[in-house]
Length: 88
Image (cartoon, rainbow, N blue to C red; front, side):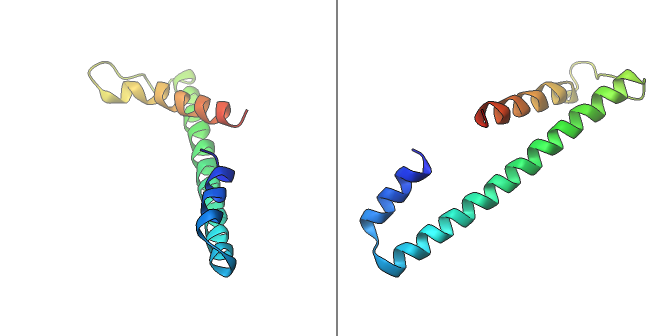
């Protein structure tokens, strides 16, 4: 269900000033969430670049199993791919 569907449902239950207040609050919340998503996406990209540069120059070595840190780089890349796919 996209935002327009949600707004249509809201419109069918609210009227006048009440509706305007709800719509404004929803739009503000979406903008805040989009900003957070962008910040996290950029942080993940920087972390991948940092790890890759560290490995390339010998400052960072990939951990060995069973160290859970071994999954860090692949998980960051998956997050980046998901965000990029969502953004089309």
